[in-house]
Length: 403
Image (tube, rainbow, N blue to C red; front, top):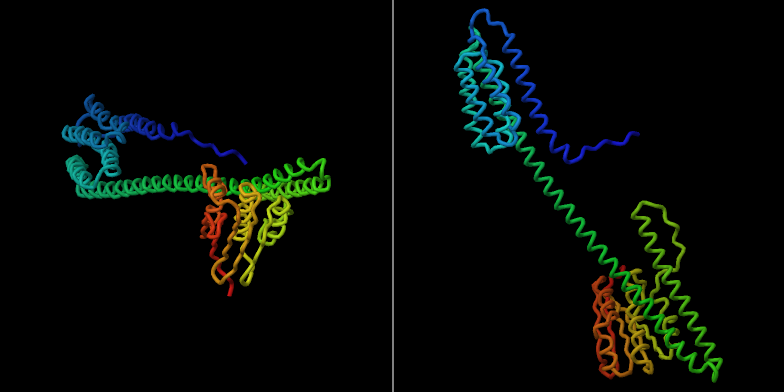
């Protein structure tokens, strides 16, 4: 296959102007030859002289700039053509020049202006029919009248097609801008989603590792068994963090390959965490020194993967905040399933003012991430001091159950 040749924008812009110049110059040469060689044995027309060639050139040469100044070119061409007809030279050679000038006006000017120009062009051409050979005068009148009408119709249609093309170009540009804006919004949303996921994964596991590291260092010589248990918890948290990071990377890689039309490497990675891992999460937090009491009420049912991950991450982040800001508190996780929503409450009995200030401060990305996650699925998150003291995070996510 040969590569398709594309013209540069500069060449495409210059081509019409070059074509008009070539047409004007070639027309002067061809029509001059016809004027010089056309037989006039009967003396129907005035003998060709230098003024005939001058007027002929003045009719055609302005057509080189007909697209830039259509009305001016038509007036000039019509005036020279009228002089040419009045002097009685062979008439046929100038008709094409006046016709093209009028077509250009019809293709680029409003209809009211075109109507006036059509009348002027027709009158000039009718004046030229008096030079027709004997016997074909009526046919000449019909011919020039039909010619003006055809030029008017075709020029008007060309103008409407050009206007439609301009409107389509504007709409196409608007669509392109809208698509770019939509793509930018999608990229921003994807970045925020990745940032939330990274924050939830890293913050939770790093918090657990930090607590266990401190514990292991404190009892390293006095209680080797406790230190060993803490190191095992650190190892488990690190492995789970790496597993979740690999899952995220595989999901991102497969999404990129699908966008590029490539075959993915498969889906051999751990499923996204959900309420099925709630007990495992509670045990990890308890290993960090925060007792967790989990209660699930109502009639549990399967959640969509997105909602399941959202609920899990909110609980994980709330427990992470307890580990970071109230490490001596007790935590309670309550999950309730009802007909229209899943309701979650994570509460602790620690010092509410300390936790509230730490969570709601300038660096409170965790609470912001919770609200963003819940907002995606139409849910809400509230956080603040609990009615019995401590701090409480509440999540409500509407769900549609299959009947």
